[in-house]
Image (cartoon, rainbow, N blue to C red; front, side, top):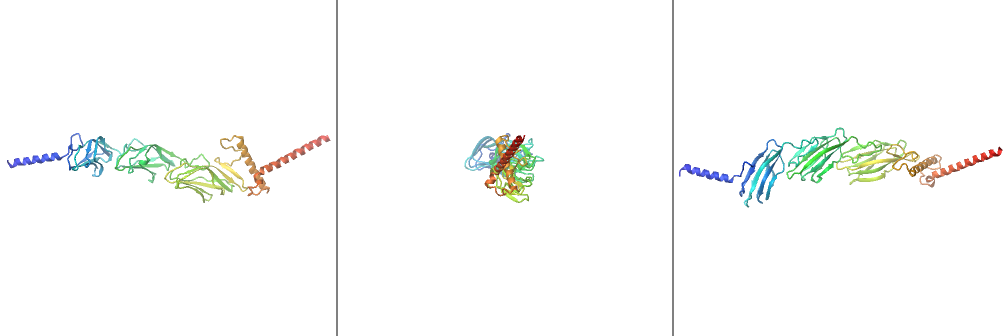
Length: 439
């Protein structure tokens, strides 16, 4: 045999061995192993790509990998994204991955073989999010290893803002959706444990919110869709003359209400219809005219008080300030009335109308037309006036508010008035009788 023939035989054998070891690849596949694959085999199918894509995923018509063998999907830079081992599965898509290129690496052991795999389709996305939503919406499902901050969600002129989620569904603890304020301060972070449908965020101070989605590499989910935004134009409920917060109040909120001032009063106190605060970062503070702190309402687990009076405070002015943190909100508060005392120690009630109540003319509440309420107010007023007259005539001392005379002064005066009236009637009748006799 000539040297040329020997060379040809060796070359044919070499080509046969190479072809036998190479992975299968048909014109209908993007990447495909031999069926079954060989033991102690390692090969990487690289550059499965869609130029210009922002996200990409692959479709397996078949995947059958032994327990001691593994097939790994790689990104453009050779980083492991997901590994399949000991799995038999058909007709499925991988999750979405950021980038325009993926690779596949098969590594087998000497512990047996299986069918292998065939990747027959590729799908890509060209944007970072759904572009026909003017607020913010992720792709469904979102991609692994994804990070994006949406354009600002604004309500120009608003003092407070909140947004509505049609849906929020995150996969695991590595995936999170973060809300920021206008200045990129973090407000709240949502994870898989806060997933939900059809809910509003809490209120936040300002006219702008920002949304950012950050995902890991261990799974994806639906994502989110924001479909509404709502704003408030004032700092508080403006149709009440006494301080009242929005219900619920906003996070990161600081506001001092206009002074509650009653000229001529020597003492004041306020009545809360309700006071409900979320936690220790939220507090309501009472000040005097000179901004000295009188009382701070807050508690570790929040506050929920109903229908109570503050203490009496010296002076004719009280101020109310609400300060909140960013870890939750609650109902807030409503002050519906107050009481003042003057230098004669006479107590007068004032309400949201910003006028001192005169029980002889004012009607307050749902039963304002009932005789019993009006009579009670009249008697309270009559007692107050009687006390004032008695103090002026030195019959009573200002501090003498526990004595029998103080509690019954109106009846004393009414008794005196009755006696005087009877005396006048007797005198008039006597004069008429004398006149008739003379005639």
